[in-house]
Length: 435
Image 1: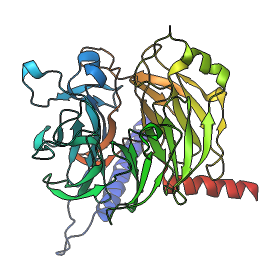
Image 2: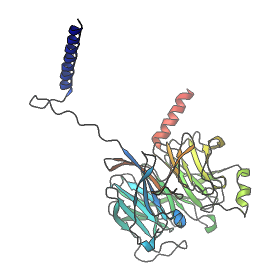
Image 3: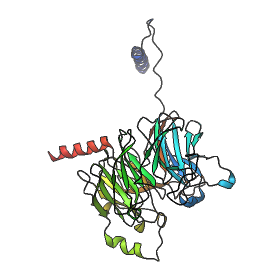
């Protein structure tokens, strides 16, 4: 009996195997001649996520040089350092003033205070071309600027074929071919004479171009521009010189840090009017900032760093006085932010966290002291480090990219700006919840 049971079980298994094989064959595509085609190809490899950090920061911070690449899928371990091709005597090189990327070109672009924009091929991690600005020396609007007029912040326009690039603190902006570096045009902004930071709408139509000047120089803080038309629509004046900035999804509002303020100011780009000054409670920063015996890292103002989550529900602002990122809830149309101290994110004491960018999904933030932050948890979860395990403390120029078999398929923005789809999803959810 036992032998019989064993034989029957064996036969059943064999039959099941035959059925499975038959079903498997039916699931395969059939070739034109009636034969079974080859089995479907294996799933494509997972996306690889890399973090690019362009160094050095101000004053050669940390003695870093080149673009440091970290593996975001494996605890941000060191992957590579892409050099600028400098001689040993030139190291670490001039401060990096900005970084952007082009997906169709598979390139990143790094601007330097030394007077150049360098394009890197991401397939080979080598220099593809270099743009050097003007052939003849320019009149400097800021001492120490590059005499060739190149370059401050770059920005990749939709489609990835054109770059909008700030001159070196001067009164114009370049349009460059992302493939060759050829100058395609120029936009003059005489009332914002020290080109510095910028942001552009997702459709590439409207841009807000900031200047490192202000009321003391009797200049505006922002030029609102028609990007394709290469013309200024209007200027916006703020209480002091404009520093970092961000925009909501359609650039109807621009949020800016200004000198001498722990907080930010908001302007309506359609009217050209500043509509609100948003300040951290005075008892938290004014006396400390006024104390001549205290020293603070960085850029000479309490808040040098601002961004928002893609859905625009939160505005993040650096607070060098308290070594933290302060967060405002941003309800409704974004004109009335509300300070939320329960969301404060402490950062490295005494280092200064002077910039912020976020992943496109809004899950991670990368800030100037090298901290990596879980946005939803409002918590530091990692620190950017080089190949020797040394923290990178001047990470103001950061991009987070996704690669499929070595080809760039997604890249974050160097600014943390609003996103139309994320904003619409949030507002739609809010409307449903209220019904």
